Amino acid sequence: MPDLSPGFTADRFRLDGRRALITGGRGALAEAMAATLADLGCAVALASRHEEECAASAAALTERFSVPAMGLGCDISSEDSVEATVASVVERLGGLDILVNNAGASWWGLPQDIPLKGWQKVMDVNVTGTFLACRHAARHMIGQGGGAIVNIASVGAFISYRPQNGQVVPYTTSKAAIVHLTSDLAAQWAADGIRVNAIAPGSIETGMTQTLDAQTQERTRAAILLGRFGKPEEVSGMLALLASDAGSFITGQTFLVDGGQSLA
Image 1 (cartoon, helix red, strand yellow):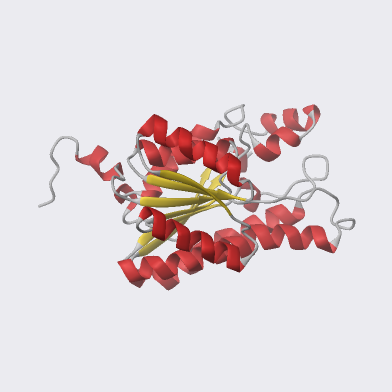
Image 2: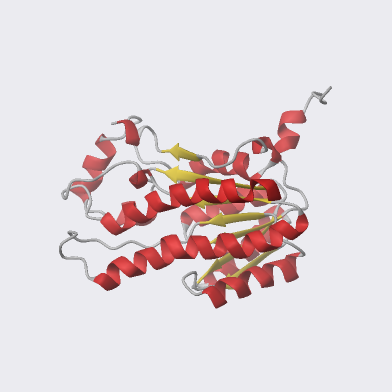
């Protein structure tokens, strides 16, 4: 019989002794996700092209949560850089149990006007970068008997925008690719003990949402069933589930955290 003593549910969310890497480690969403993992006892590495900002966030995590944390410079579109980042995390934190793929790029414009370099930039960061981080992390995870990968997709993978609401075809296409990449990698690595899932946030009060003009923001907000934008910390519950033993029987899935935006 399983041990269902008081506290068993909370214990399954604990991440004491585990080590995580978050790519795209700069910004409010990355900080909220890093704090979530650190609050559960996990050591955290934040990586992005902005190494100094990642290092500052890491220092704040250590001070606040008393866990090891580090900031690293990483160009997610470069395999050499990704490989070196994973190797550094493994060496300095003693291993890698959790990967969160948060690095992302977008390019605004009508599809007939988007330059090829814009399309390629988004694909290189969002799709190729996610794949590179997954495979280099998986090479280590396979050797240690498993791990958890959480890819950050988007509600944009499930809806199509009219021009007045969004001209982001490269972005939404790349996020749809991440959804399928997630299920494919889950199928490939299940026997190795690696769970691969994705979170698809809706419009969050950070990042791309804040770059929209006031009218577009209002139209977007009106299309969300809960009537508001999400907060970065509202992604935390799903991340805690998928990164921990609380989600030990979940793999290959993408979970919308969008306030009902995809249903409007």
